[in-house]
Amino acid sequence: MEHAPGLPDELAAFVERLLRFETTDGNEQPAQEWLVAQFERRGFEVYEWEADTETLVAHPSFPDDPDALSVAQRPSVAGVREFGDPDAGPTLVLNGHADVVPASERWSSEPFEPTWDGDRLIARGAADMKAGLAACLFAAASLEGEFDGRIVVESVAGEEEGGIGAAAAALANPYPFERDAAIVAEPTELQPVIATEGSLMKRLRLEGRSAHAATRWHGESVLPHFERIRAALCALERERAERVTHPLYDRFENPWPVNAGVVRAGNWASSVPAELLAEIRIGVAPGETVETVESEFETRLQEVASADEWLAAHPPEFERFSVQFEPAEVDEREPVVDALRRELRYRGLDDEPVGVTYGADSRHYVAAGIPTVLFGPGSVEQAHHPDEYVEWPDVLRAVRVLAGTAERFLQTARS
Image: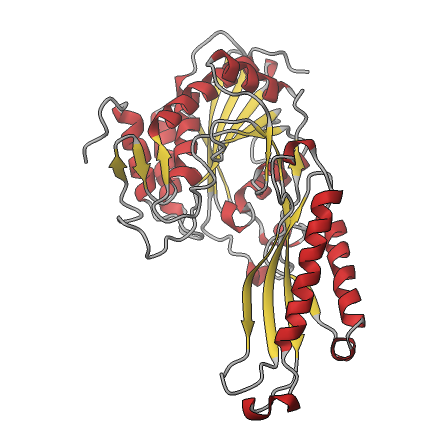
């Protein structure tokens, strides 16, 4: 395949090969084995780990049911480069995830066959986040200088399922050394992200009474009840947008969104719908906890139910499901943030820290006491979309910025 004119062939070929691996959840292993070989070829010391099911089940982010977690044959891998006296300097982790979400049928090209459109590289995972992962590896490989410390390049599994590999690394350090800071190369449009939003996943079940549609007044449809509940949750969403504030989220009209992404009711057009299931995502602001936000929404649901005769007698079920994302935030005065901002200014790029309305693996490292910032090429607007793409010049910029940031960070004394 021809590369776009003027592209560094080695990096372009590396990203293209990585994109051809169909690393949907549970299928990361072949790509990870290939990455191990790439680390070894470049002189990195390789580490590998898998998540422990029982450890994750005990973690509040993950489901309590071990059968709901798939961790076998899903290795996370890392390559480590040491400089000078590595124990005399800091250790910086450059993190990316190998897994991608499935591709829909609405693509205009094969999603796992990279396609170039000028400087635009199109493939599933191009933005989220294989180009960022490659930028981490090439930045670390390019470092040469008189300094002490370590650079760790991680490729973790299961980020799209709540951060399986990153959570495992945060809960049980897979390295024989401590980690001082991390950069997660999510698609941030080359901006430093120091705050990520959390999310609460809730499953709502309503019970009605079926009847023939010709005499539907003999039944109890769940739909009007759901409409009242949804209106109440949306009202709480609006209240929270005004009441719960954060300086990095003023730019968002709806900073803590509530979304009913799945709604299923009834089973036949000629029957009154007697059952409803809805799956709802609720935004959690930095500074809040999933637990406190969950309590707030449960209280609002109880208010609606107690005010209705049917719902009072047939209380809605409102339970957690899937994975919960705690919000995360890092102080902009942290050395890793300062090093990144200085490098961005040096290269004439915007260094103003921002917050985002999505979650990332950074939350696991922050919870483990490892200051972590997000920075990478591409836009989250492309993540999970058909014809996902990344602008190649931004990938090249990301390599330079990550390399410069790493060098600046390693040149600082361990605090």
